[in-house]
Structure formats: C-alpha cells, structure tokens
Image 1 (cartoon, rainbow, N blue to C red):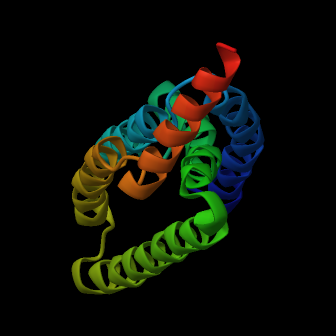
Image 2: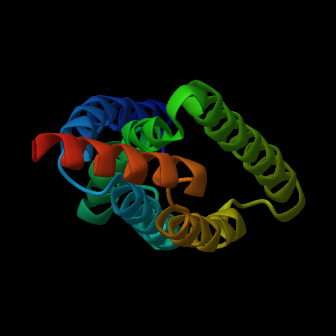
Length: 168
C-alpha cells in the first residue's frame, strides 16, 4: 500500500476519533460506564484480530469499515473511566490518573513489543492476533471492577440520612 494511502487512512481514524469521543461522552452520561468501556474494549479487540484479513495492497470496503469503526472506538475509551472515577469521591483525580498511567504503560509496552515482533517476524499479524485477546481481557476487567466499597457505604448512609430527612 502506498504511504500516502496509509497516511490518509490514519487521518480518517483521527477524524472518527472526534466523532467517537463526543458520542462516548454523551453515552457515558446515559449508560453504565463499566459496561460501555467493556463494550468498547471488546469491539476494539475483535476489530484488531480481524485486521490482518482486511489489509492488502489496495483499499477495499473491509479496510474502510475497520478505519471508521476503529476510529470511533479508539479514543471513545476516555469518557467512561472519568465517570467511573467519580465514585472514588475525593480520590477521583488520583483514581483517574492511575487508570490513565496504566493505560499508557500498557500502550507503550504493546508498541515496543510490536516493533520487536515486526523486526523479528517481518509482519504485524501476530501482534494484531495477540492484542485482540488483551483487549477482550480488558473488557472483562472493565465490567467486573466496580465502585469502591467504602464509598458505597458512605453513599448508602448519606442516602439513608437524606431519605429520613425527606420524610419529615
């Protein structure tokens, strides 16, 4: 594939990042952010596993579909963790910072490992096949990790107190 075509496809991913992030922010206000994030990661993983079958010397409909869908999902993963972090109360900024740091560390390790795999094997195909299951594992973690217990207790106590006060 010519470099200019590949660059144009990457630019399209960036354009659809904007659409996905704005849409994700809207959805995050309306849907359980844990389930939303899990869905994003699972779909991202499936797309990555099928990427080798969609690439070739020319641009075909499957590759355009990948570019659009991956673009929508790529940065859409930012709003849900910020909403989840709110449940940590005063520690929400710290919780969100830790999530972002872990995400960046993982992304850096995958980027480095991808370069090593490409140099050793001459292809990224194995990387896409391995990254897909990693995304699916992240999807499961996103769904099972819930609000911290200490905040749920305080939230329940505050809700109970406000309910008792409302009955007067």
